[in-house]
Length: 87
Image 1: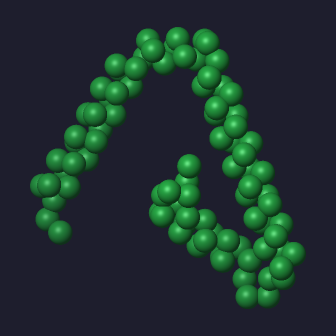
Image 2 (image 1 turned 120 degrees about the horizontal axis):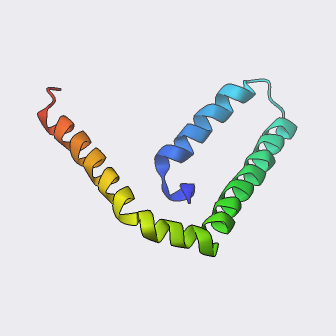
């Protein structure tokens, strides 16, 4: 999911370079990459399992209009602020 988002990829690269330092070995790099892969699979797999259950689907269907309304208001406000800001 995040591979299509260049900001997420660049943020991970920045964090890894800060965490590793110049003296890092290939073992350190491999450990971080494997750990990150395990975290990603666990988190996104957990999301997929949790949000594919019947109770969660019913809850989302009931709350969908409210969620989308709040997000629309938030992004509309943020867009308006950008339009009216002096850069």
